[in-house]
Each structure stands twice: as C-alpha cells, then as structure tokens.
Amino acid sequence: MATVVTGADGLVTRVRISYSAPCRAGREYRFPNVFRFEPPLDASTVDDVKDAVTVRQRLKGGGRSRQTASIVAHRTVDAAGVETWSGTFKTRIVLSRSGKRLDTCELKRVKWVAQTSTTAPSGF
Image (tube, rainbow, N blue to C red; front, top):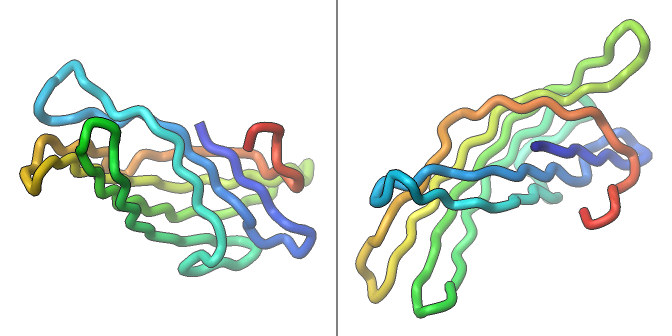
C-alpha cells in the first residue's frame, strides 16, 4: 500500500510504502515494514519524484539491519482532475549479528499506485 502527501506548492512532502519483503534463509519468513520517504528527496518536481535512502538500525537481540530503499514516481491527472501517483519501489534489507550476515530480504521493482493527499492521514 502506498500513500503520497503533497504540500500547497504541489511538491511531494511524504511517500509512505508498506510492504512485506521475502527473505532468502527461510522461505516462509518475510520482513514486514513501513518505509517513509521525506525531504530532502534526491529529485522532486510537481510531476516526478525520485529518492534513494540507506538506513542502519540496531535490532533487539543484538542484531543489525542495513536497508537500502529507492522510489521513482510520476504524477498523472485524469480528465476528471483526479491526481494519481504511480511508480516503482525496491528495497534490500541485510540482517546481521556480530559482523556475520544472517539473511537478506528483498523486493525488486514493485509497482504501486496512490491518489494524492494534501494533508497527512491520521497515523501517518
């Protein structure tokens, strides 16, 4: 699921993607998460947005995660004036402990579509 929030100037202020990435070590294991892209974005106009981010986190139990995520999106307006953003999202999460790689979870080029919101939904 994706949500796009724009400001009064029409520029994207937030893109929120919720996903569940499959992991390699255990075929039944997935890495569920919600990722937010916020300014400063790598590139942002009223019609296009592009960003790539790397996040490192310590996990409970002494582990660590390194996540790289990127988004490319384009805005379209239909004949009725409804704004829609569509694009691709990809992410790779490497889970490790004591310098040893435990698992890698990954989504490659997932397509998404979201209508524009000019105010952030509650809980966003």
